[in-house]
Image (cartoon, rainbow over all chains, first blue to last red; front, side, top):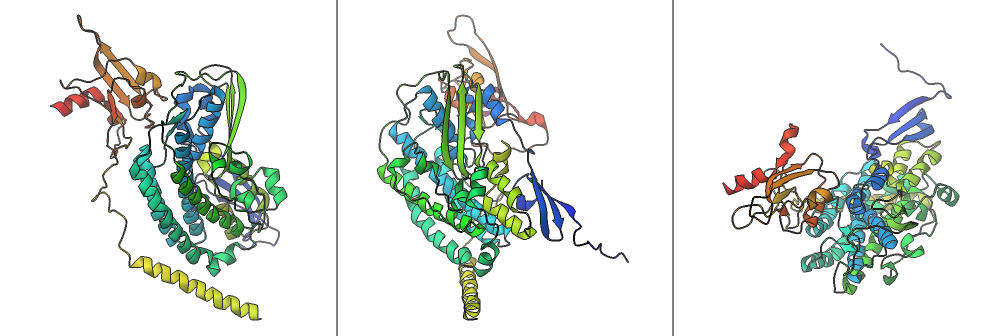
Length: 372
Length: 146
């Protein structure tokens, strides 16, 4: 009979998590050097679904590139499109009608709620609870139905246009969005009783994977990762864009620095997004959704433009360098999860592998968006 | 000591609260649809692959201006037409959509100024052969009229 291999106390082995692994939520590979159950060193390996989105941005004309943005992050696609259309509008000097901006904000917030719901389900599933995912997907389904009825697709929306929108929202959408808000609030209460209060859940997260303010700053972390470590930074508040200054909402900040703090920030963000949607629906002005004057061929003047937006996963930035032609000279996409992911390499040393996977879940990684 | 026992006590309560929610959900009617035996209707604005729109005579509205082919980010559209003698407009002779490359962005429909393209409601597209996804839209239009 073969006897199990006995490891010496200082002996390590290499464990590959991914690229096809349910806990990594995509094709992310983590090379871990393990000592028993403890991680000695970890290295994230990315690039399995690199699709050259930035290069495509240089080759395609502006309108042709629009749909690429919704392929970057399949959970919160609208936020990314928003960043791109804003920077091109800024560069080409296109005025956006007020109604279009309001609808954009409502849509982006709905998408943010959908994204956070999916994250919530997947995160709890990483920790071993399956049913919250089903409840979260049930609520998310309502949002996807609403977005599908307006935009025509469920994930890869391609809804925003330079200067406005693809098509207008109808009364049915407004009615279903209004109905959705109280429903979601009720569900949030349910989630808090079912998951947030659960003793097993709390014990798995409290004090686990501490990320200091300095580490977050060093790596350029944003979204709930930074706000869970006490950094009060939200692009919507700090560098206001679109119609966000018109809305009254708070930026949830927790000082726990652990996985539970990051969880709490995202759960509170759902409520804040609901507040924005509610106000947006109340204030929604009439009027056109596309500007009267719009250049037929978009050729921004020579220059260097940048616009950051707050997506569901953090601050997403688009830098556009134009040489005055039909295609950009350079299009740099600053992806928030790329920065957030590198915190994993730094902070998981000495952690138990099960805690490390919970930590990875709390970072809310979407791999196509990292690889882009 | 007190903290230890109160943690156990409140922890147990939290578990029972969770169980109560699970039980409540357990007796609720299912919300899922048993696809493919049941299907949901597609919404009006659903973006499927494109189809040609016909006029009253059953001919395609298309005037072969080529704007859709130019607007397409992936170059999926190939079209050709001839100008019959004595007529003002071109007549479409070939319209091929390479669906293997199409990403359903809808740029072609948006660019069309002649109301010649629309989205279909088809979504059950699966095949093992690549040729099945090279759509001859003009042929499909003629098949529909047959």
